[in-house]
Length: 329
Ligand SMILES: NC(=O)c1ccc[n+]([C@@H]2O[C@H](COP(=O)([O-])OP(=O)(O)OC[C@H]3O[C@@H](n4cnc5c(N)ncnc54)[C@H](OP(=O)(O)O)[C@@H]3O)[C@@H](O)[C@H]2O)c1
Image (cartoon, rainbow, N blue to C red; front, side, top):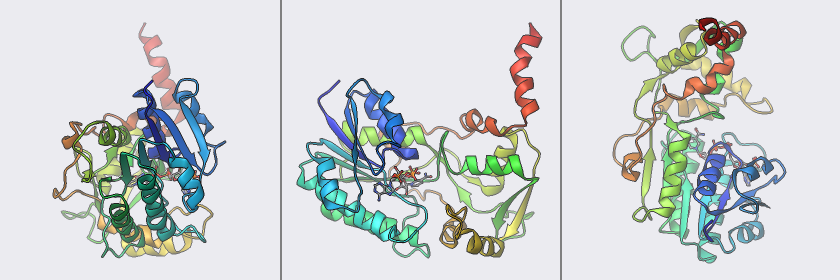
């Protein structure tokens, strides 16, 4: 184990837990800064005895953030929210929280800061989420000019909220809808376009931002090897879940009406702000360096999603697959 210490904010989240495991496997001491340390205790076995510690932190509190970065050689910010609730606003988390971490990291003399932003962040976006991500980047660069900023597209992996959501819908309903502004059957009518990136590749880029020189002060767009429209994404879901659900295109106005009601669920399935993001799609435009500049070959969706979408297959299919090797003997 090295004596190097990394503090990972949001280490219990989907991306954060993969980053924790990467640094632990590389021999770093890892301090996970989370609000609920008991809920994050499942990460302790990712390291040797004493290698991973948990510290209770809210990124809305100066003192706890300062304590969390004390003595850290590197600081990673994987904190983010998808919808606003009460005082948990995009500005409070993505801008003020990010600034607080960057200032504290600079004051503590950390050598590296890696900030997870999002592809499509834009100060002029109609989406409040995307605008707050852009403002967060500016705040981080102001407080810690050598920070590395990573902008992932939609991230996929075993615990993702994207393919798993559609896998669950395929399990429960006979229809898989996607939203489009164009007649579904004409060219380009397959809905918005996405370029999903594998969570393991994102975590590797975070590790390399810290351990390999030459990435300080740069902004990267992290995307997968292929662009898919929503209809193609749902075809993959149908294939991997061994379902034959109808895939139908519906106008965005339906999404807007649904989102209006769904935003009031305790954990909203869709919000009006997310519809604005969805409509825009999430594809790199080639103006920034990417995974290849870390020497990482982006992983394809097809080689990975089947390993976790199989939980949504019909029970008899799963049984048949389990039994088939014995039948062949
Ligand atoms: N997943 C994607 O497809 C995707 C794509 C592009 C960009 N991103 C960005 O990547 C980052 C990580 O996303 P994710 O998918 O891993 O999100 P996630 O699974 O929701 O995890 C978010 C993490 O942030 C923590 N957090 C939230 N509010 C906090 C607060 N006030 N103080 C301290 N910690 C707080 C959460 O801890 P609690 O358990 O305590 O809430 C959790 O550990 C975010 O910035 C997100 O915008 C994600």
